[in-house]
Length: 227
Image (cartoon, rainbow, N blue to C red):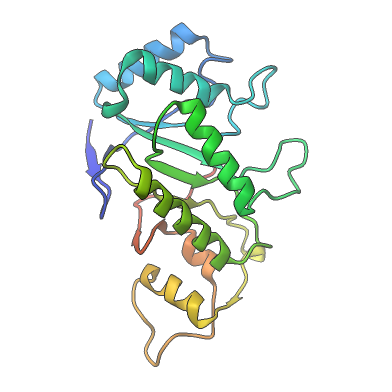
């Protein structure tokens, strides 16, 4: 299988990622493990899960992450895979209520680490956007998590915070940026505009095409996630 280095990290990822949403639940443990081994044998190395996965199934809440954690411990394959998971998804019975506050996302992140039985998540996604939360707050939150990770890390990988943004153009809006906010956003932009920074920028549209890693940005080949 082809692989591709993720720029400005020491991660080299297979071009096909294996989703594990219903592994260990709708898909029984034996079948799930067989798929994982087949995927690794084919050269794959990116496992994708999420805090919310399988919550739509009876007794399925957190089952995907729990299964992946159990498999990693049993197979001793942690060093062979890139672990990707997600938090900040609204509860399924209250999708209208965002879960983007720092305490909530931090709780999701820490609980994912426990279920996955790992010291560090290699790629961490914010599963849903909250247009009511200022972008600067989100970026600073990710920065705090990254700093905490780098202080305590047991592996050489880094957390990459990623925004999943609505593609509904009616929900994209211009954001007033303070000087501090611009200092955070500027490194993520392809090039500075002539004549200095704009007063407003459609920053959520920008974030939709950018993998965020403080203080650098990674522009992926495929920038949208609808999972």
